[in-house]
Image (cartoon, rainbow, N blue to C red; front, side, top):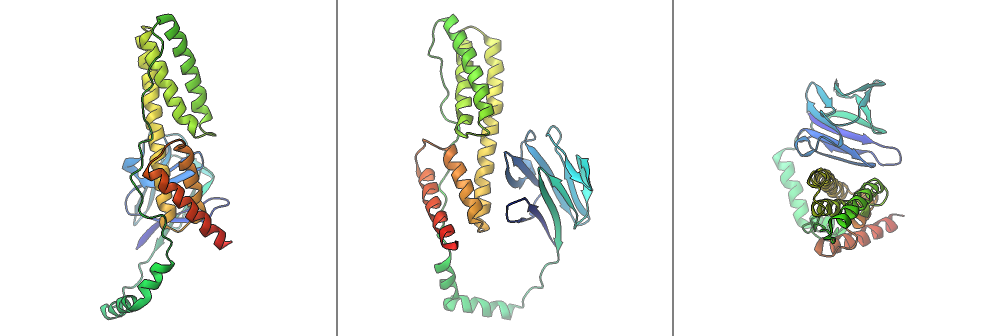
Amino acid sequence: MRYYLEIHAAGRTPERLEFSSRLAFVTRDGANVALPARDCPSELHSLEIDATPAGVHVQVPQGAPGAFALNGEPQRGAIVPWGGEVFWENQRLAFIQVAKAKERSPVVMLGLVGILLCGGFAVANKTKPDRAGSEPEPPQLVVAVTTCVASDSEVALRRAQLAERAALAQREQSAFIAADGLAALSSFSEAEACYRVAGQGEEATRVAAVAAEWREHLNADYAATRLRLQLALSQRRDADALRVVTALQRLLNGRSGPYVDWLATLRVELEGLLRRQG
């Protein structure tokens, strides 16, 4: 048998993912991705989905927010039979069990390979989109740590308080403007540095902890977004891939390098493909 998670969301083509390991289905700011459960930070909106021949164990991780709906009732953990479904973050997650197709005989398989070698493979490669070549190593999202420009303790304290207030506002605004997420981290860093200059060690430690949590959030979101792009490209979902490329370009606005150039080339290719598709 083969086991699948099928994701249904309004206005989007259903997405089917085969279970190869225990999955964590992550939703944040309307973005969805499935990844190995061990790689999913518990503070995200996430479900741990464990497929077994007897059914699917669906669980909200301890410490993670939210609940899923099963038969109209909110749940944080349940066994869902194959063919069943749950509702999570305005999406329907269906669990599908399919019998494996009967394997072809070796003679038939050799015949198919011969056909490919005689020309079919060349035609397939000719029509396959290049997808801008292989993906370069992505840059680190979080870069330099900000220092405090003030040396006077009173001035440094005022700067620290202003920087912290700015960081909190930018963190909230990042749900609408991606660049504000990194700006918030820079402001948190400045607040920490200025609290130290002002001799406010406890305040500096408190802000450093908040900054570390936000840094982890940004890096997890960055990794999940890149994985969404890989999935969309591998499944030929060009419109979804273009949306993710746009999100990554906004996140990396002002950066340069091979990965940024690759995103720009990929965007042009995807836009061309979508225009030709009408």
